[in-house]
Image (tube, rainbow, N blue to C red):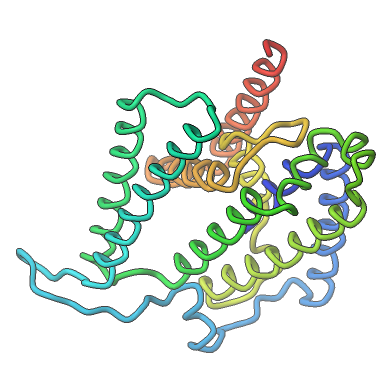
Length: 284
């Protein structure tokens, strides 16, 4: 959820202001958490609550090969398949309608093909296990909602306009103060959802849960295409960056690397992503 917050901030305003406000409120909130919980872990939490972070949707199992297959997961995979193809066709038609340059057909086919292979592999693995996790439903709903807001609504365009040039956005009639307020309000809501999901997944609440997650989120956004100057970045890109960071974290853990080495690697990844962004902006 922190990824969505950071991506919204990257789109909505100068990095210095966003970082100062975010870090200040984070430190205040963390200090209050330590004070209220007195560094104690509270748990175990009720089963109905932990279902949010560790539960699965109801499954319909059928025999397949040496095991079983969840029909619900396969149905969602078909729906995702149709949605991806429809979205790509609509994008191509829109570009042709307004005379925008478009990628060659083979590139579009290759891109869609790679995405579909990943989607089918992902849902096939879920169908062979316990089905679709409930937390995946939450993430999917949030991705769809914020992708729609940032790409299809006036409010989303105003966020990008504010991030690209706050003075120009204000002179063009955008109430920049109101936009900033709603962006930070959304950050608070997403932070609350993230806390609920994390505590439900751990079946307990501890003050130190989520430490250093903000650095992973920031790195995910820069890897996903967000710019240090604001006004650039997408929700889908941030999610892709989060998947890359997740794979990196899991890979380092499987290799048995210590947390100290992992921090060095993640710091280098973040530095590299920011450097590439700045160099590309200079060339442009």
